Length: 229
Length: 409
Image (tube, each protein chain N blue to C red):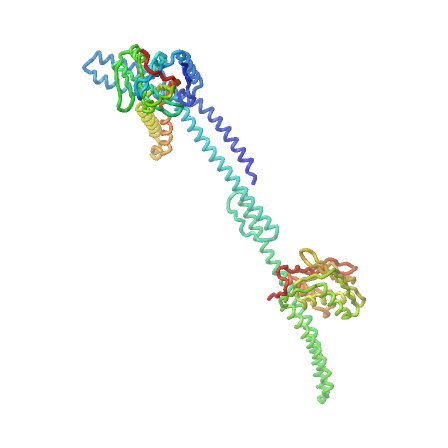
């Protein structure tokens, strides 16, 4: 089955400027789409309430994603099962972080808040092997009785974690503030005190550091009865 | 106030300025944010990480120290990488903020300009109204304009002009008042001097007669006393007329058919003057609220003037009644010698007369006009020529809601 859509939402996936960057990002997504179009993932029933997503597209082979994974930032792969474009049935997040000191990948799977699995992978080759064998469980009570024959599956690759986002926002705001204070050291004391307007601007600027997906893939998959051998 | 054009022009200027600002800002902001996460900086930090690891391997005793440094560098590197990932959003947000601020500044400036223009229009309108009042002769003691600048100076000039005009008007009124009093005093002195002189002469004659003939008879004395009584009667007549002018009563209005009244008066007074004949032209009833006696006094006065002006010749007077929408008009036209132009301007002022001294006080037309004004109407000289004079009496029509007779205090 062909992927329903390889798309980059105009305001959420790729940076809007400069235009060339958006263009190359679009090319990347299109290339990914064309390379993966022939081999979509499979969706099969695991048990009463869960389905398994397997034969995932080899997006780790993409040079940009491969390069990004080695930066040491915590990259999130968010899998989402849905009936339509909006309503989400189940969600599973896989977090991959390359430990620069140990030079190994830490992989954590969050299926539910209580169900977390961790494993360590030595190098990118192991990571790719693990990815190709990966079966992502997606569980929802709605699947127990008369599940629909076809379901939507979304995959978003988010380049950094919420904690890294917060830390960078804080660091950015402090950097701007400290540079402003340094500039006004020689000025009058009244001018040196930070105005509420400055704080508002700092807040507005720093909150523009947000987690936006690098890649957004979406398929409509037919639910198979049992996993393939 | 025509504010549409300046507002549209200002908004257009704001849009154009904002567009130019956005283009300029984009060029600058792209460059400034590119410094923060320069690839070379990231490379150096990555290299530094490798250095710390290598140092830790070479010097295991200080491995913890190198690890701590490694963590700090890694943290900074990650922040810069996150920043690099969010650079487009940061640039977009900073541009939006700059543009918003710029647009706000422009809007404030534009608002100030519009407010100033509106204020100026309002001040100009006040000045126009003040000038209009000034042109109508009404006082403008305060234009309500206290600002500085050209408009403030113009307002001050208007107020100063108004003050001077008011002063001049007051002086003129005082002079006219004085002039009227002088004229009245002259008239009074003249009217009183003649009988007093006559009375003195009669008394002197009586004194001389009694000196020459102490045994004068009662008949002889009565002759002098009759002369003195005549002079006293003239004095009484003068004071009577004067007091009637001074204490003219308010009209007692009642609903009257003016056409019938005029026809009736014309018939009654047809033979009152030897040289005057009266004709009345009416076209149906004309109801008005008037004081019958006062209206009679006005008409008799006009007829008496026509008769006196035409004497010793004869004169014909025509009365014509017209009912208009807003008033009832009565034309009293004679074919006498008319009224000289130099007199017509002050015809209705007291003590204005064309008669010989001692034959009239010049109060008749003043009293007549006052009566018509008290009725809510007027008395005008509408034409005056050698072919005669035409006076026009105007009276307001009666109110339809009050058909019954009423009177005023």
